[in-house]
Length: 238
Figure (cartoon, rainbow, N blue to C red):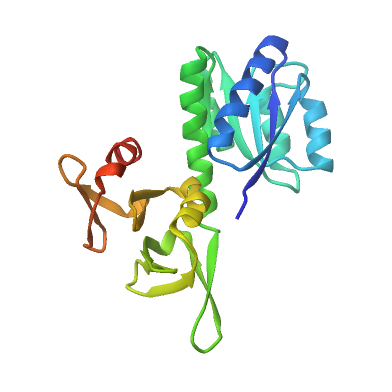
């Protein structure tokens, strides 16, 4: 279940372009396993490349020439291959104009720390949207294969050589795997390890007990947070 992301970064200032690329190489890797980044100082070149080999995400500096970021976004919207847009600008007043192009985020140029956090929010939104289309397959007793989307899975429990998958509608699926393997595969989709025997889908956590000792899920299930997992869980559940 590897998510590949092909990202284009467009900025006519070489220094900012290089800095943004270096920043994205670090940040995007936190959310996607396989990341390819291409840089452009001219949006026309990016559009030509997108037509031949589509990008998944396009980061557009708004104030560029001869084709600015809004004009490039307009052309992208009419092309066969759709992509996610992230606008990049030092002009915060342009944020309202950007809404008509439905960007994932408007990243403000500035310190690497602030830009890094805003790119993280962008990639988090993209990953959450992707999770609606990603599913696991389970084989039932009748040998029928059933697809269960990640958004339907509320928690996962380790049970000897198997994992039990609890869904939002009360069903339970089982398959042979280890908690370590599933944690590695699903953490980029918002699943959080709270105990040696439990993973939870962060989007289904309703309440957290004081001191990060337990979580209550939307189904009403109350699960203990293991002592060794509290610090890690705190950073992801807040």
